[in-house]
Image (cartoon, rainbow, N blue to C red; front, side, top):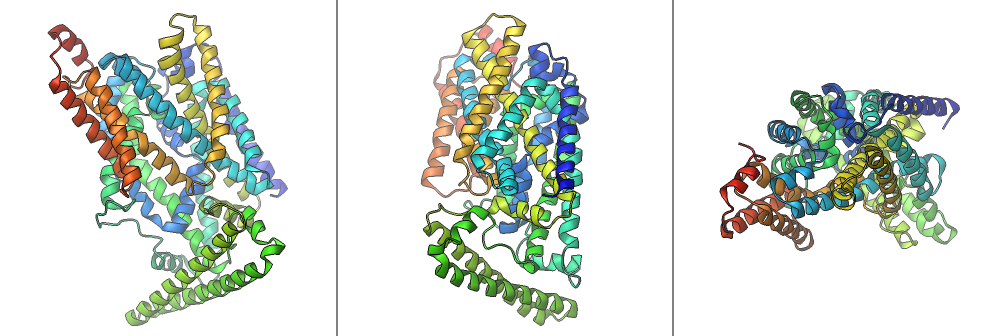
Amino acid sequence: MRAVDWVVLCATLSAVVLYGLWRGRGVRSVEHYLLAGQTMPWYAMALSIMATQASAVTFISTTGQSYVDGMRFVQFYFGLPFAMVILSFTAVPLFHRAKVYTAYEYLEQRFDTKTRVLVSTIFLISRGLALGIGLYAPAVVLTVIFGWPDGTTTLIMGVIAVLFTMKGGVKGTAWTHTLQMCVMTVGLVVALICAVSFLPAHVSFGDAMTLARAAGKLNMVTTKFDWNDRYNLWSGLFGGMFLALAYFGTDQSQVQRYLTGKSIAASRHGLWFNAAAKIPMQAFILFIGAMVFVFYVYQKPPILFEQNEVKRLEKPALSEAYQAVDKKYEAAFERRRDSADRLIAATRGGNPEQVRIANGDYRQAQAGFDAARNEGAALAQRAGGKKVNDTNYIFLTFVTKYLPAGVVGLVLAMILGATMSSIASEMNALATVSVIDVYKRHARTAATEGHYLLVSRLATLGWGCYAVFSAQYVKRMGSLIEAVNLLGSFFYGGMLGVFVLAFFFKKVRGLGAFWGVLAGEAVIFACWYFTSIAYLWYNVIGCVVVVVTGLAITSLQRPENSASQEVKAQFAVG
């Protein structure tokens, strides 16, 4: 990086952090530390909800996902708007009126203690593991910049995020998100402009669209139904909707965002904003990845984007084998570039038959290029490495090698700042559940406000240390954006199912809810282990199993007395 990039990077990050600390000043109570005193306006809460999801994983891995697999990942979000509308009229008013710090407090009010403990434990496991993935993503950034081991860079990012979160609490975090989203927007627009403007003079924006479309990178919608296909219209609408219902309705990292709202109306507006903005934002990020792909059609990319693996290939012992692979890779790149020019010329000529032939040749050239790159990855693996998946390094390589001075610093500030904001939100949520659902409920039920505030900050520190440790085990999980959503899908179906029972089935009691969650989780992991069903469907399957099991057990139980039933029913919808 050049001096001006360092200036832009440090100035931007400092501004964001100082703004968040200033906004988070004066925290003196647990309510203000964990819920911002429920004073957040709808627009700040809306941007905080969105920024909690927009970590380095979003920018590093989503662009790489599009480069490799096209824009069809956007279908993952097709069910989200429906989920936002449903939650705005169910979870939001119920949680606000119940006056809870966490979603799992509500489960004890509605069912019993054991159900609350079970679901809060599932949340701590799932979100704790996801926190490690979120922290590893910026370590990739610093590793690319400095060449340091990712263990070192993970530790640096973890320390910064923990100190920021411990100081400002959820209020400082939420206001930081507001400024961070502005930085994100500017950084993304600049990155796209650069990707398109760096194309050769004879390649127009329309030509770039042609090449991306021919290579399958603009394939936004797949209508064919296939249980085993991760991303199609149906898995996105149904599996994606159930995942969004679970994430925004039962995951404390999101529930805590809209519990900070001034009112039920403010929280609803925050969810509606996300319903309208999320799909366009993700499509825009994926489109950047597609344009980076076209850029590399004309600018030869490294055979592997992860430079540590390239260094492995360059060892003297592999010299002969690597030269053969590299020669084949060079030939494949030139063939793809030439076939791209022929496709552009045929498209401009307007002859359908010539376009069809040129399109087929271009696709064959792309397949040959992919095969040559895979040979390089296989050689690196044989040389002592693990299975190579460099998806997460593609966008970073483009940013650090080709963007102009100053822009590199801005984009890296966007990525690192987004990560810090997202991690801070997740550590807030983990600390909240640890203190409210575990410590205060079972260990120290009566203590001073200052004591619980101190414990909340110590819990934040503890989860930060855990994230640094667990991040070391996610580096070989491939695309981080897929990894984090796969991990969530292992648990979200069970969590969603128990809240569906709580909201809509007044007669279901604690025993049915508890065993329903266990049955749902068992079926989800069985689907993962024994079948090839796409992970988005785990959310639907798990939820249905929980509801059916809860209803079945309830039907076998003796009815409670009417007074007990009335108390439980007041916490359900309707």
